[in-house]
Image (cartoon, rainbow, N blue to C red; front, side, top):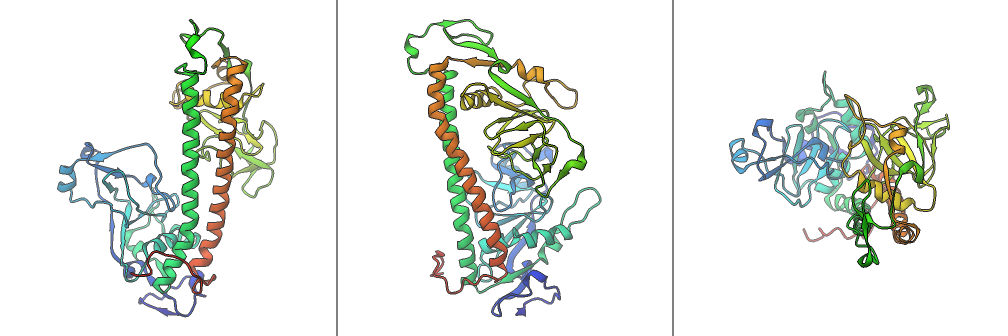
Length: 429
C-alpha cells in the first residue's frame, strides 16, 4: 500500500487494504472543499433559492423537514452564495451524526446551504463521487468524525479537519463497482419508499372522499343531520374515542430498568424514535407493563400531541405515548380517522411550555362511526394497503441492514469486487 500525502496517519480500518489501493486525504481528492453560506435571518425571504439546513442532510439521503427558507436572487448575488448542484457532496459539520454526507441529486428548486454544511466537489479523475459519499457515511468514518468534533457549546468539525480526513483510493473502476453495488440497495429502498407513499396517499384519499367529503358509495340518497361535528349523513354517529377503542396510557419506569442491549421489550417514551409509519427500536426495558401490541396505534400525548405511528412489535409505552385499539375490527378506519383529525399537531391539550393530554382528554376525542357496513367496506380496502406498507417497511429495514453490513467490507477492500462483472454506467468514461 502506498500513501499519496505526507500525513503519517493511516487509520486501522484501512491498514489491510489491497496492494493496488492507496490512501489519501479529502483535500487531495477534491477540487474544492468550502463551507456553505453565512445567511442571517434578516437576509432570508423571497422564493428564488431554497436554503438547505443541517437537518436536511441525512446519512446518504436528503431529509425533508417541511421547514422551508429561501433567499432572493439579489441576496444570492450580494452575498456571493454558492449554488448547490447535482454531483456535489454536502457534509454536515455538526451532529447527529457529525460528518454525515449526501450526494446531491436533482432537486425541484435551486438551492444554497448554511455555513455548517461543507460543500465538496470531488476530482473525478481521482475519486468517484458516489464512492466518496458512501465512504464518508461508513461507520468507521463517522466514528472518526465524532472523535474529531470539538466545541464548548456545540460540537462541530472544522473544514480544515474535514479536509484531512483519510480516504481509501481503489482504482477508479473498483470505486465505481463498489458504488454500483451499494446504490443497488439504495435504489430498491427508494423504490419501496415511493410505493409506501403511494399506498398511504391512496388510502388517505379514499378515507377523505368517503368520510370527510361524504362521497361514499350510495351517498346520492343520503340525508344530512346535525351533530357535534357539524352536518353528517343520517344514521352516522358521533361517539367518544374511549367508547369505540381501548386506550392504554404510558408510564415512566425507573431508568435502572432501561438498556440498549435488547434486554426486555422495546420501550418508547415519546416520538423521539418515531419513523414515518413505525417506530425504530433503540431502547429496551425489563418492566413489562403498559404494553402496546402489534397493530396498535401509537399516539403521542405530549410534545407534540397527535403524532402517530403503528406498533410493528409488542412495545412498552412510555409517558409520552398512548396505545389505541378499536374494540371491533376497524383498526385501519380508526387509524386514518385519527390521521385526518390530527393533521395539525397540538390541536388539543393544555400546558404552558408544551401541550399534553390526559386519558380523559383522549377518551373524549370525538369519533365518527358511519355504521358497520360502510366502515367494514373501508376496512376491507385499507387493510391490504396497510399490510403492504408494513411489508415494504420491513423489506427496507432488511435492505438497510444488508447494505450497512456490506459497506465497511467493500470500502476497506475486505470484499474483492475486481473480478465481478458489474454495470457501472461509466465503462466508457
